[in-house]
Image 1 (tube, rainbow over the protein chains, first blue to last red):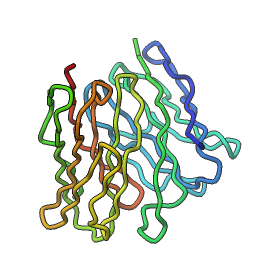
Image 2 (image 1 turned 30 degrees about the vertical axis):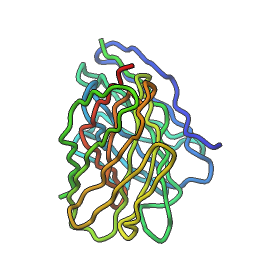
Image 3 (image 1 turned 120 degrees about the horizontal axis):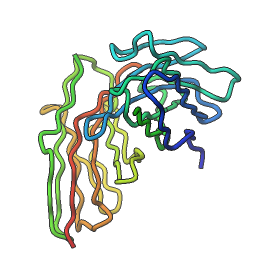
Image 4 (image 1 turned 90 degrees about the vertical axis):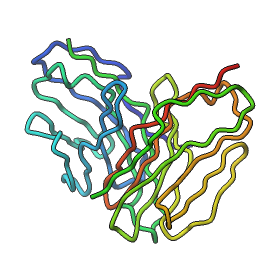
Length: 118
Length: 112
């Protein structure tokens, strides 16, 4: 069964360092997402990506964040200068289509990368 | 604005009891999807069900059932004959356009 794969499963980094979280979406999917879940809180939308550009982003997704699809298979989230409050579980998701009732879409989530900033 | 409310923060039941997790959503869109995800202690999000806004038919899958009522903007989830393995945080989510809106989750503990 196809799945979204995220690496690493857990990353510890020092405050101020850059981190790159990696995701391999399902191969025939066209829409990609990053979500964040601070420990014990709800899952929050960060950004959606389609056709090699950002289609939507939240207030959380400020200039410290960037996304890229460098090689047609990976989808990365970069945090340039990590802060303590960036510590969270980061989920990547992908879907074949956008939310359109005629498309019968479904988003698949990866298992998450737990980022700990110390 | 889109919003999902899961009023039950924590629920504890004894094994084999039935339990219903509530979800109320808000949206002005006429086209949307509703989801339930399970998050076990290991942290991953496990897809359980998707419903589109035009399909109010209730669904049963084994011990799981879902009751979608547009009139009350609710999409409730019932587990019958609960088991210890059902212990997890359950999230209800609304999808419109390119974004998911998650509720704050309900932590379910099933006591053996």
